[in-house]
Image (cartoon, rainbow, N blue to C red; front, side, top):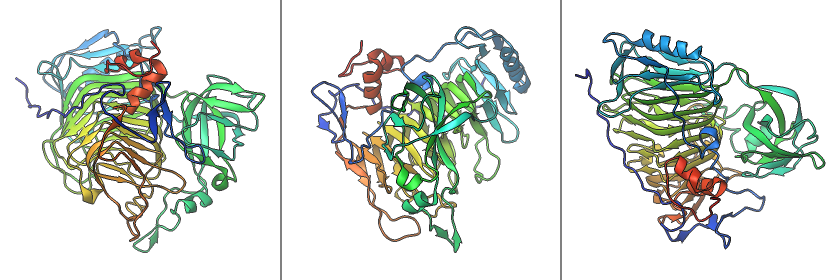
Length: 531
């Protein structure tokens, strides 16, 4: 018999049809042209909604791998932590195959007791259970609160050679090309960091230089720091000093506010970053507790310094701050990852999906049980794309937490119980003096065909946020600490869903064809086909 019972609530799931046939309403921002392809409206500076379809494992459009499992671990009835870690260490010593995988640690069906953090620190290693059904694998978290699984490389990206200065007076959000003072040092395939400096001029332009809470000045983002975007070079035009990136930029670059020193681009290495790692096919049960977020908690998975990773078919019960993806994670898919709560949490709410990397896709994920948690957030200085596709949360919603995340998409998400007082549901907004000066939390971000109780979508200076085809109630509010209402973002076809039914899937279909859409679990058709 199982020692604990899973109380996993079934998430509400929306059904997708890829293409224009489901809804008849057309967006003024993205619409089908006579060529049967999506067309994008641009503002007077060339900014447009970006192509989000690069979010996900291997840049999306590929099936998640099934990795061989050379080691089987059976539950022993006691504490299984050491046995599972020993198996992970053993697989980590195996040679990688041609695809870069060493193998999977296969957990048998049954109940495993784990009392300490399991660690994956080598490329090509997968931790896999027998699934989340009644005959699958359950991990009981026992003992004092701890993090279940840490998947992490080491170090940070290191620039190589001299950076090139970006010479454009303005680079629009959503574009892939830019000009530099010397392009000859770059080549297709080079990993690069685009550095967007944080200057006093930009902070004041954003209205973030005068935040005061209880008489104490608050710092939004420190001048002298920078916001970096991790990309790969697609092509180089040496004669015109023009560089084209593999994935669009999520933010604009305006030299009026960023120079000096100005934006730049540099090649980088990241020798400590691991890749092709995953966790899949198991359920996790923690002891339900209601403690302040400053106290030790049972948490699920933390990931950092990782490239090309996935989580698939994983259920967490009664964990807090369940999944944390750091800003050094790139190209990751979370597929059918579900978090459920059996007890409410009082006080400041933890975040179950904290997504702060780039090219992240959370597909068919959910948070249920009304635990008073934040289902999904981003943290400081995030440059996407970060995509929530068919995400369900029955309490609160998708709320970037603080300090300027760009390139976010919530696509066909459903938040039926968001709270007005928490500015939840979808909140791309100015949080002002909250926290320690969280200020503007999002720019150039989109809610597409989202159903929610409330929407707080505001327009930052020099940027925009979009709510298209959404159904719910619009909130118009002042910055916390002020009484003057802020300008709303762009609400388009509010109350009536638009075509295509899914922006992300249609963009993926146009870029890679319908087979790519089927590969991530959405067989159907699209108006533009490459197959």
